[in-house]
Length: 424
Image 1 (cartoon, rainbow, N blue to C red):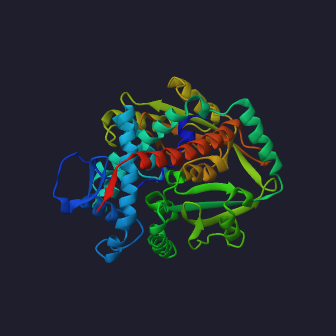
Image 2: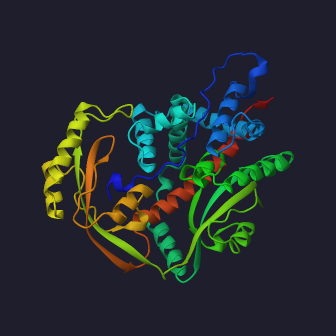
Image 3: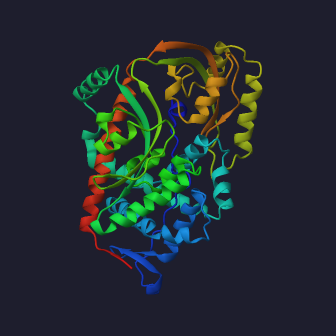
């Protein structure tokens, strides 16, 4: 499947990290923490706390923002450690990489190019803050992949073992859950962490979006996906989490659950019996037209607009999938016209899944604007099939994501123990 159909929502839409501090000696009253000689200022903490308060519907001028400061400081320390490791290994993250990540966020949230900059501006958050955070996130992922090396990719034996495990699950109940993990690295931090978790839960239960809150607060790797853990069986969860999930109604949000390493907040989104559900399979075609030059700074220029308008004029007369195939050929078949059978349930972002679910057969979609070009999609047919094992690429991703998450936890623990960290 091509890049557009694979594009995943980066749930860190409103995340923001501190600008990396210089190793200087500012007024000590402004220092919140020092990490290996680099300073996190109280201004960094206050700005991040304000952003977090806004994201969950708190009044940023209230005392609630101040209550977020201890947790925010811990998050910023971890992000500083991550960025220091990125710098140490000399991992380059280009402006193009960051722009592509911002573009994925905008697509996943049904925003036009440049929409994210406008959203953050409306919240009083400098766009440069998000750019710095995205650069750290991308760099940290590169660090983890480098650390894992060739062992990251699953072997045929790994794939066969995972498939055997998935087959054994047929007929069992799976629970679709999302998580927010609040770490406790010191016994003295237990009560503050539990209090913090209760504050977050209170605002979740008054309507704050779980994915956004997870992206801001959770210290698990799943924060990048809005806390989404996918479908799990009870025996794949921590026993305390499983005992809670078993009795939760769909949509409910748990109280803080004490687990090894901290507190877990979970939301049960759905449950199903494996093998009993059917899946909608799509037969689709697409035409992709490249721009002369990619979109930069989120702004569609005259050259890109001309390509978009030309493609739309040509698709007005397209009433069949063969016409879309011919159009894609005209533009050089840069992306395959036929990506193969597509399981509707696996399509991301959700906005694109919704578009395909409601698009009439043999009708071209509205333009799907991307950084490098523009696409139109047509649904040629829909069919219902019995649920089967996921395709090999999805199984491989499950294995890879699990390995990356474990490596992230282990490497951060090592960096914390090796580092000199002081907090005021």
